[in-house]
Length: 322
Ligand SMILES: Nc1ncnc2c1ncn2[C@@H]1O[C@H](COP(=O)(O)OP(=O)(O)OP(=O)(O)O)[C@@H](O)[C@H]1O
Ligand SMILES: [Mg+2]
Image (cartoon, rainbow, N blue to C red; front, side, top):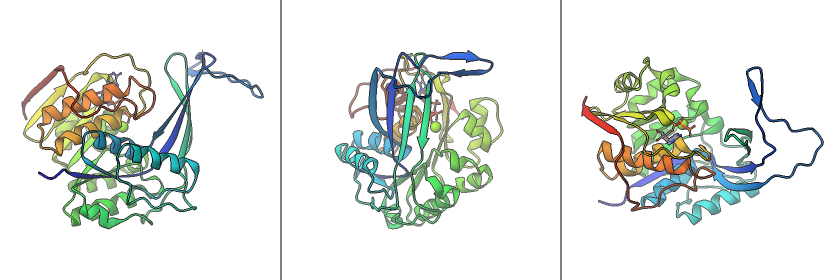
């Protein structure tokens, strides 16, 4: 079998994490906050630079797992766009479909890590392509084996529709783990699902699409729309089905969480990186869980992504016929 091509589509960002003993949580009413007096110059203890953006994070999982990982999004000529491109090059992600133009810029997030592990994010979302996907190469979508579109910025549902329809035209399969703007219109998203091959969401997101209280109910209802459904619930585990069996999995390891940025990306991309190779639902879920567990032990969305050939151990998991 030729090495599958997975094309990831969506925004990139620069994430800058600041750690300080001064970011102390205080409680007042129902708000927990840290106080930063106006006009001071504060020393911080540590700074970590990392690139982010869902599509760039998942592309790195695919590349580290030895797949033909491609990334497509119009980038700017700003410093952050350059850093994102560099990072992807270093990871052997193919960026041939990226165009760089002055009118675009990548996102930038300043993330304050408080002493209790909570975080406050200040985010500039950058300037990205429009609803019609100007400067995206729709031919690239048709020639990939799989696409993974996410964080389409201003493009929202309209662009997602266009991307998924291009995939169908080219017989390209689609994995979806939609972000905010795509989830803002659940009705439209539901109609798109008939052209989606694998859908991965967390519990709250899935509840926007279908009824259900438990993960299992949500998965069963989701199967009416899409052949493979995965619903995660943070440390409470995950339920997944491919229409043949249904799996309930717990935590891969009870690790100290350093920074949960990228957990969802590592999980979903970890799953797809195995599924495209024809691995079983169970093996794909185990790798997804191991990948996301590793990511939450490091600062940033990419540092903990597992390399190829890492030894996995068993995890609490129950598989039964659907
Ligand atoms: N505290 C944790 N300890 C170990 N593993 C974790 C923890 N939190 C998350 N994970 C792993 O990450 C996976 C995805 O997490 P979660 O369900 O929170 O996704 P998400 O809400 O989509 O995340 P994101 O906010 O990154 O999009 C979980 O199924 C689990 O395998
Ligand atoms: Mg998520």
